[in-house]
Image (cartoon, rainbow over all chains, first blue to last red; front, side, top):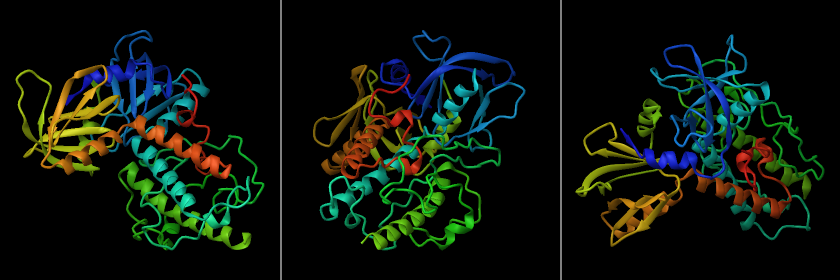
Length: 259
Length: 149
């Protein structure tokens, strides 16, 4: 299959900002020797160069549909990029420090176009709903209750695939996955209008058990249980429905007591 | 340049945002318009011979320019080589416009800019960062300023 390699090389080396860059050791396909390469992540493309100053990448890994996991390996700070197909290759990489490894695993696991698109669609809907609602309340008020009307249940109110996979990666092949514990400072939940999940705490929702999804009526076709999805996207969809329900519950709760 | 062809082929088989049989011409000397199945999946445009399961090729749609040419025709070119154009002749002006719109939105970079824009707008309106609930507000790729390198 032809690929517009020249443009790819240009994209890799032009001065558009990279989402991550640094040295990583890459394990060879057949041999277990690691080669140190300069890696540059742009969007859903992970380029690797022989040297930092090289003019052209040696190769690129298209990250769409991959999962990223920590490795149980003799080498320190290893992680793997895996794909779903039967004959797909697993890319084993090793960072030079714990911090570097964590940084790479985080950025790679969120690198897919699909993921980005889910977030964008969700924000788009939020903005649309806010604009449609009557002019918001007091200035500085976190949320005007009027602009967060409780939504009628039904698939048309929530996008089919709401983002729901912020920090916990799918266990696609049952291996331990990187769990990005929320060490991030967050705004305190002062006004009570915080956009937090139904659990009432500041954490993103934990990996939801399958059974919770089946009762959701918001956009769920009831197919959220049972068979393990074979793709990253399908997992998004499933978790998304659960979060859609959580969000709906939360919004309804917000609307009630605030009035 | 090495790349994971198997995964790209697998991507080509996934449901497309947009797919159609369109006449296509590649920027090679002497090439002519040929009917191709053109399929947009994430930020890739795959093109197939109409009776084949595997694509002939794929175009990564980053740093590209989508231009309306003459009637029913649009082109894709890349900013480092603007004169090398992939031309597409649609069945109708409407189809042509739809493809132009879809392709303009199809890059990762466009998506990222949209996200930053919406995030900013929502933050202005509510005083809250909408990415917080997803735990990704610190994610480098979504920051307003320059990315960390």
